Length: 86
Image (cartoon, rainbow, N blue to C red; front, side, top):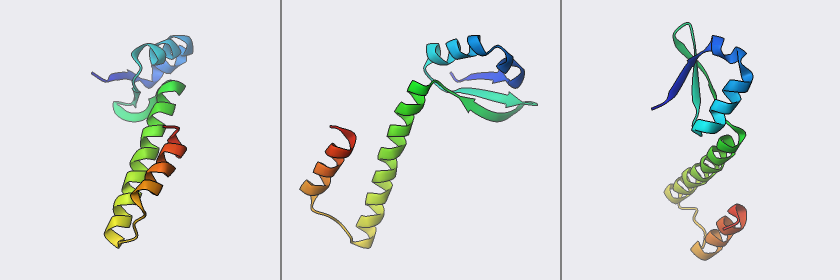
């Protein structure tokens, strides 16, 4: 279940930092009852950023397939392994 807190709870930064690391998922902050921002630990952010990069590469690949501008699979896989350290 997502963690949702009101913006006034941002005053207690130490407790909020501990919560970010303990639950290991984004914390949704509301302002006047509406979603305003999202907080997360740096570790979680880096993990999510890597996933976004992979998803972006997949979208690019799908667009290239639709345009017919594809690469040799072995070369492309070698590039992915090198880029992501696999």
